[in-house]
Image (cartoon, rainbow, N blue to C red):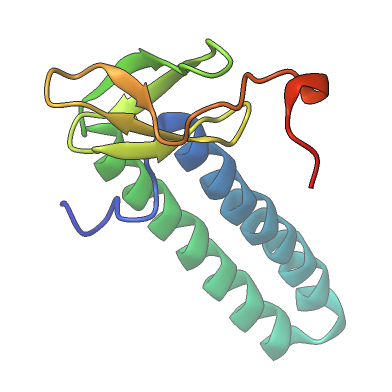
Length: 124
């Protein structure tokens, strides 16, 4: 199952991307139902393919739902991210900054924040 979750680091990311499949698959299913009455064979094929797509997405998401996740808070913006346990880095769902998970399981900044005041920086 490790290869299935390769592009998803957080549960929210999985939900966003899988919802697109359901929207497009459902839309194609409705278009296929309308086309059944207008152009029978094309409508039947489109309806069947979109139904298979939606069913495949349901199976895929249910398999990924079995993967354990844990809540981690972003060190930049303090938002809660449900991160899969096997992940060692992820992008925050809110601020999109990269976060590293340390060996102890704590989130850490992947890039330091420049806290120097702009008026104190040397001019170039």
